[in-house]
Image 1 (cartoon, rainbow, N blue to C red):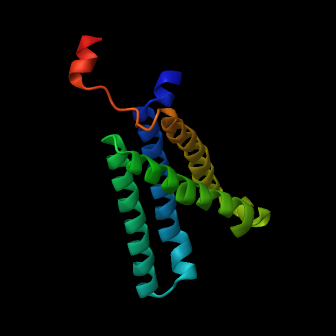
Image 2: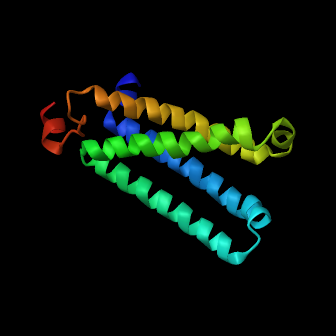
Length: 147
């Protein structure tokens, strides 16, 4: 398990799980928060475009990191830290006080999953930087056959 957690495949898998939990949180926002906070249809469409750009950029960083790009790895680490950790932490600490959290059961679960998987992905992605200037690459078919 330790080898998988410290591997590039483990880091990307945890990042994908973080993306899926944040995507779920985005759907919850679209159903419950955006209609009350941004009642106008134009603002809701603008928020949907922002979410789409964030997820597309995040997917690009993961694809680049998966292909062995150090820049992609750095960008995936930054996206994970800035977006997928900042949203649940800010929601828990600033946006929704304790009274609000008592009423928001599904949001609590979504934010907790974002926080847990975001932290695990951040640690696993951060461990990828320990190799001397190179991203720990995926084994090729010939390398796995030879082992």
